[in-house]
Length: 157
Ligand SMILES: [Zn+2]
Ligand SMILES: [Zn+2]
Image (cartoon, rainbow, N blue to C red; front, side):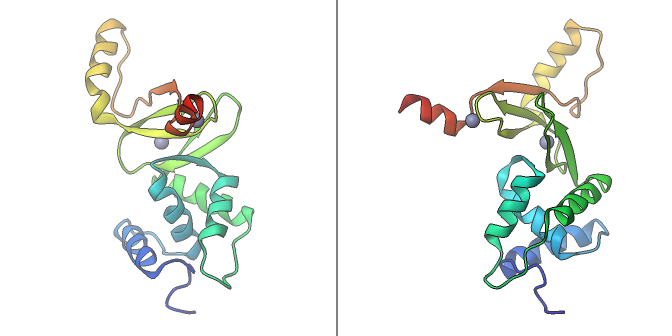
């Protein structure tokens, strides 16, 4: 086994490896690859997208994982509370980091999902609780709908 089994940038492997170790999780190549792809997204991706991006960012000559491996890895990380799943109206399940409380903004055009930090919406949740008899926490999971930055710029072109 080489010192860099994930076939990613060594600095990324190192950082995500430390993240997994801090949670008492095994540092497998596929876990590091999945988290390396999701980390900069600041949103959610479907398994097929995660798989495509992992393939794209592996170092040259590396053996890419198959979709089944990515799916298993994602499921394990959900069980461990590192990722969480969100299923949209079209039935596609997407996955994002669960490490900080957040809500989701979904693009009505391209279905991309961006995470909105929960603290920015805490006042909105307080108002919503006052106006309904629902108990809503930071983990309530609001889903907001609108246009993502890419689709906005496409519209103005
Ligand atoms: Zn999320
Ligand atoms: Zn969009």
